[in-house]
Length: 55
Image (cartoon, rainbow, N blue to C red; front, side, top):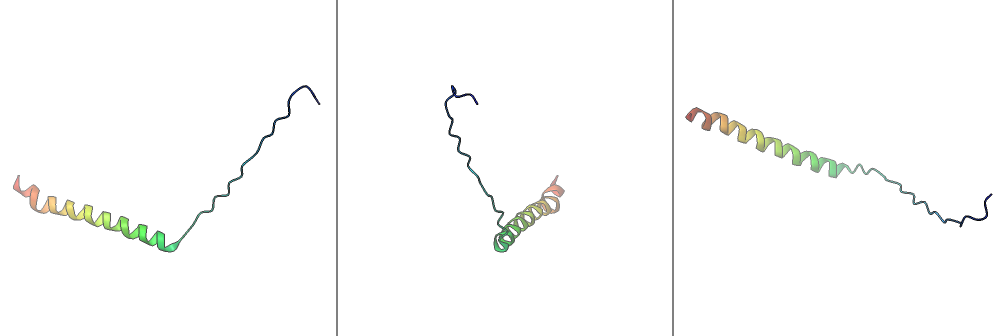
């Protein structure tokens, strides 16, 4: 072992990531994106049904 090199103190940080599968949050996200899709298809239906026939 080489005694001329200075001793380095290296700290290792451990992270434990836990996936939270909270069913209420999943359900709320599902409802939100379902609402987005309904609004999108509703606007698309409005354009096809009422706006495009005017041209």
